[in-house]
Image 1 (cartoon, rainbow, N blue to C red):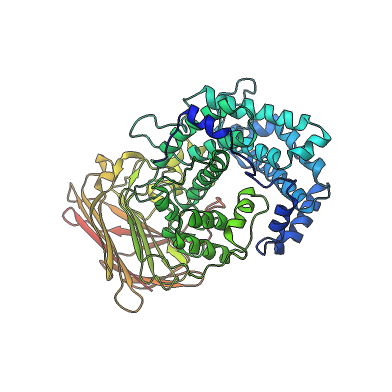
Image 2: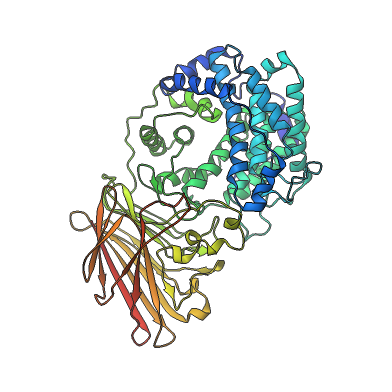
Length: 613
């Protein structure tokens, strides 16, 4: 866990530390070294052309009707897109001015700061506790309001002196808004759900890291009251210790790799700011962090393809600068090698992200590492009950399997106990559909009516017409697991993931990856025992690609680059192939569902699948 300190101890630390936390505009040499870095310089001209174009575009208005649009339609995008672009445009202009140093972007910087300060609320509609924001009574801090405070504080730290030359009111107004929207409610209220665990069984999620980083990070950069700042940091350290309890004891994140990137990047940035400001406090000294840092590489199939259980997209690009920083700070060469692997996939550094630009010097002059990243052959997260297995770690195109147990009250939960993914040839062919588009219904009582969140939207059985319900009591029991050089196995009892009305006595799933043969193979063995002689059990398989039936016992899944064949028993089953039609743009095209209707004889049934390249 993180070492905690009293407010008095922290205040002593604050007296002598805190210079050069971020590159300031006045440090011309530091900015020159950034723009001349070979990871940055190739993109700089395109970046300037983008900013010049952006200069001619007006700042988009945010009317009350736009805020209300979410309540009226459930659509988050119109409002949130504008809010997000305002903040990214602001930071883009700030970094552009520091790199170019001609004063051409200063008016735009002031205009964007002023426009953000004039927003009635920094809380987005989907997170608001009122229909229209109660701007006179701020008692709630969300992800976006916290990040907005931190963005403004970063801007003031970097280029505030240049803005003061035009009018000190820009800085004063920004500080006033950060204080009343972030700092004051943070210290005044302890009941915001993301701050602390309410009881030993409750869990937090990425919000805890993001909100603490936004609020406390902005205070580190912009607050002049050391006594108040010390109290904020004291509170923050307790909150961040609770955040660490979100993770599997082996560093797993049940929100999936995408939210790992969001939450952990803020955790690490907050640690950086604390270290630079206090000289002593670090969130990276917690022993859990080393395993947490390895989660991305352990859940990467190949390239940007990931194990996307929960609300996670099938493809995730991890920040190379974050991974390099973690690899260096924690002395984890495999994490540094994975950072290089990610950078080679997409050799670009964002000009919007002051974090990446700050960490580049740690990266080295060219960011090259002699060791090539090599994934692990297998890994099992015992608390989350996730198994990730590959036939050949030396070949990223080899056959891979991911399977999960878990329960149906996980962070960003989908009802998916027992789900599995098959990856081969650089693409997932038996898939988890991933996250749908976030709407009002997506986080409401209608959540599990949406296909991607329901158990019918996963590769798990439908028993007597019953899907898996939501709730922590609907869970898997691990009957056993084994990792070896020849095979990896996870055996689950899934009957407890279904309601009593499903009348299930036994529902076992044995998922295994075998390394014999030239390319290896996977077996999924489902055995069912019902309380009555008759019943109905269906298993859907979601596949990305075309389905070609070969004979009465085999079909092929043909993806964009690769193909696999699926052999099934009993041969009396005639699977039905259905094309998934969805208006949700987050759902990949060319998704099919292969439905097996499993025969039940004298209350028992079995479906055996053998999956081979």
